Amino acid sequence: MPTVSTLGREQTGGQVGPACYAFGRVPGRQSVTVEFDGQLHRIRVGREGVWAFIKIRTGPGDRGFPALRD
View 1 (cartoon, one colour):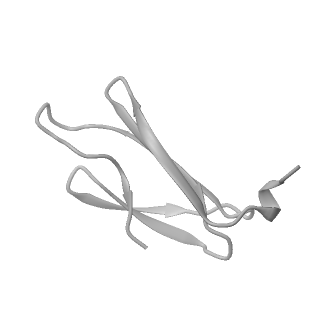
View 2: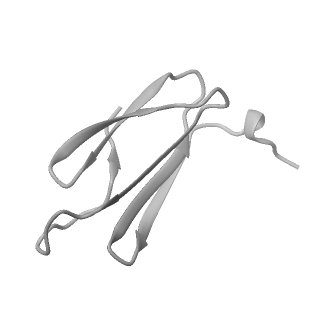
């Protein structure tokens, strides 16, 4: 059975109501940059390489989902 320490780089995301989310794993990194709603967000990576992002859109016309930029 795979464990967090044996997984490679992964990422996924989606939407629940007005909130968009993304999460993933980037072994060996201290932070990642997520682009969302026209802004860049620096996200800290945990010691197992896991990061998570969740945010509600700021306007009704906003489109797109969080995207990992690093």
